[in-house]
Image (cartoon, rainbow, N blue to C red; front, side):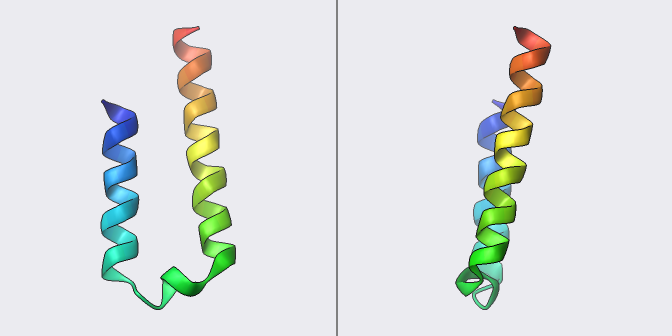
Length: 46
């Protein structure tokens, strides 16, 4: 549920910032942020 919420938040942010959408560094940052979030959740529940 939280994972879906985070993904929705990312989609909303990217949709509201079309210029940022072309920035691959930002995409990489978001990907790393999601990975870190998933890892922390895995550690908490695992």
